[in-house]
Length: 428
Image (cartoon, rainbow, N blue to C red; front, side):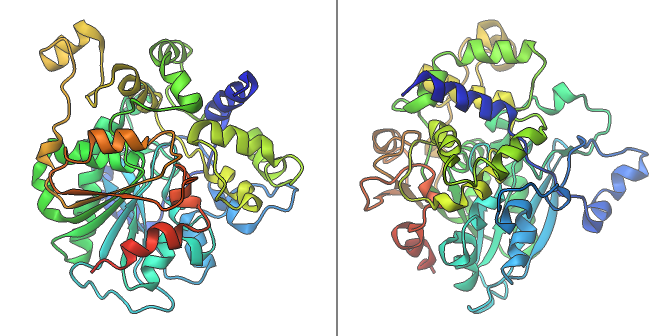
């Protein structure tokens, strides 16, 4: 792999920007208690998808629509919901309550499904292709009530209930806090809204890491999840490859440099990168530049529709904290699925020991299907078999029957419906 690809990937991660959807009336109602105290919402100044400029280059409409708008664009019912976590982060969720062709779920027990995205992604992952190839639409048409979450710090969840929170404090989280606060908050919101006692959870990549983190620390949520469908599950990263594997070895140094430069977020706002997505990434002659940058992070793919590269790169990376990425680097470098490492002194202060505690996977009792691909450089097949199969009490492995299946194929693969999704859709 050439050094130019590594540099392109690093530049892409730091510079790429996505929009933020505008708060609606529901959010205003949700925040009355905060406004009654005279507080305002912490909200970085960024544009929404629908107010972006339309750049030349023949970009398809979905590139400039947010998740809610894409759902409506394809003729499905769509809802926005907002959740406030225990520590004050405001998360936006998107819902497809039923499909166009399939039966309505009607809040039937067992028909509620919660889809959660991976690192630097958003709910858009589950509506990124045409409906016949998208898990969100396929589940809705099969009679499921589909909910899609957005983690703190991404395109849709960059607000906080405390107007006095500093920028540094806002971004002071990793996937540990996401697992402990965000996952339970969104599960509770879904069950309360649908009057159900349990749901099916589908996570991709970091969506699996955070679920395992959350339930290992809050085992009372085991009873609220009927099935954990883990796409490209990530806990240990012993076998991580590609540019991420290289960067992980220097993650501590890179995080120190980035922090001391004053950066806390992985994608500062920048219209230039949107221009690149709308021009370079849509042009057949130049879109390889974009795919090389993307594949440096996710690993190469032979299963995505390259004509939609301009759409994918308008929505991803969707952002997160530097600390979240750094936490993954620690896991890869130290070969431990453990809480954030603050150094020996910092660990003694926070944890009472020189090493951060590891997550106890034996606390997770949810029936789990671990779906992995042979060419996944992030959710390495050997890591899945060695560190998850058997460690999760009620787990079963399922390898995708395609020897070229990679990390991004689980959400963007044009044949994921046949190789992956049909197994989930058949769950009762």
